[in-house]
Image (cartoon, rainbow, N blue to C red):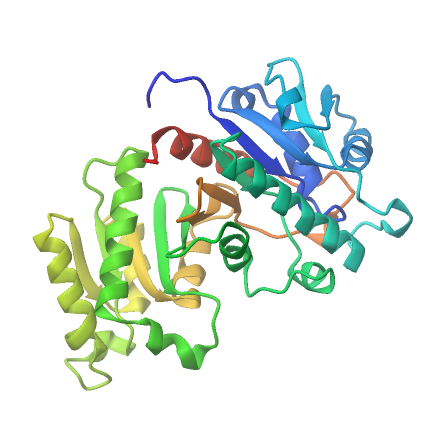
Length: 335
């Protein structure tokens, strides 16, 4: 990692009635995490102070109304204080359209800040999709929402669990539409992108494996010919570019091989094929990255955890890992 100053990272509070505020506070009181970046929180001071009191944690906030007022000092946390949480409608672990609308607004402001180059990376606090939809933010997933807000194309998800990087080609779409997304161009694009970002993160020559689409890897066309006509040609083209990539391997064994440390990353064909396997590698050191946006963006590998919201029981390890990864990418990713 370079000796540049720690990057400025915007962190949205997420859905107020979930565990998002709690894990942000628990992360920021950790001196090791605080040294990784210069955080700028976008959220509601009333919710964050309420959460800190429940957990008996002390944190000094620098409440600001304009980003130019941020001081980025070690002894306090800059908080862009948007008091838009309807506290009379606030109940831990409950779905609320007004809270969903509030969490969406934090994201809009965060991306405005990022597009103005006032932060070098963003972290989305945990969101609740139903609440966001009810609050007027209709989208299939966070990436679609962020792509729309920033007018970005060619965006994609990357998951990291422990030391395994993963990338699905088809993500949040109906199962019957998956094959439309699997083309030689899309497979090659995802291989090239995960290779590029892993190198910028610090891997010299990442070992990439590509999964098959069909059962048993297609069995030479017996169960489908996408492996022969689409996936193998894309892998061959990537190899000609000097990328260390192999496959396609059957999806039911590829993660077992990754457990044996045969690969650093897996490019998969669709959401569940990738996410079931990667989440078995562990939640605590996990993050979901959304790339192809104006700045690197990440979120935790878990959701709002309504069952423990407001009880100070949430572990902050996934948020801490997300801060670590996004901070490192923010330093190294080419602009």
